[in-house]
Length: 222
Length: 190
Image (cartoon, rainbow over all chains, first blue to last red; front, side, top):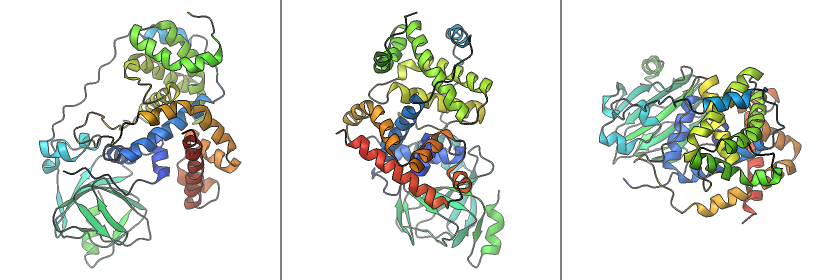
């Protein structure tokens, strides 16, 4: 796979929320996965973290309790509770395609996920990124197929992991992030030569506007 | 335990203190790091709405992590204050939000490596801490306030916007503007 750097990045304020530790866990998984694919944003996040460090450095100190240092010193020799990272059970294709930390949420790999058909050439697998209020899923779009036109109750963020899609706002390939807000009615179309796999995070509801919308809408609520 | 050294010298040598912990498990170096950073981390956590006792616990755990992870500190990647900030930030997420902080894995086979040797950049970032702070102070009040809120306020940008009775887009563009000005300051260092 050619490593072409992403050209559509997360909003700078999203990177800032990630660097400041305020982004939701689902958003943090997406940002960190984007960072694995995007050296440019890695530099930006390092810069934002350096700003956080400088701001903390400039804080007016608040006294720790009298015994705090002694208490910490006495804990230094405690055995480190070793939390074994769960073994990477993913198949080799998933391992080369999906970076961490997202891959850690995929169990045995892409093909073992509970894919459900969502229309012609569209399959979707719900993911649990530890954030029940935020709907997250992977979507596979067969070559040349399109996701139904839909609008959003809130904000839908899509990151391409494989292949590419086009919509009215541009072309999105591996690592690219597309943000669709409530007023955008868009219908992404996968390019003809390769299936397109995307991570999608929706904060708030999502309503299909196409002719099959009555059929589709019940599916997209988990 | 060492006697209190000159503050300026201490600031310049925090990196060396972490390295001393890594190399010789140096407890006096650790104590010096604790004396400087623990009260600042506590202040940071309390600004984020953590009450005193809980803030102190998170600080203690973060400082234990500083001891344990000292070997992974790399002064070419981050200054001491940045490295310790990220440890405290992650500890707060683990402890107070009971969530896992997702981090990228630098050894991941799927990771796209840096195209250029980032050394020049990191040298620059090492020198720039004070410049960064000066840059924050030079911003118009509304922008520097927003930058501090972005780091030190639990509220999301959407909530900050609601509170300030501003459209979210306005808050986002002010943040972008402030960050852009700061980047210029940092890049002026050459």
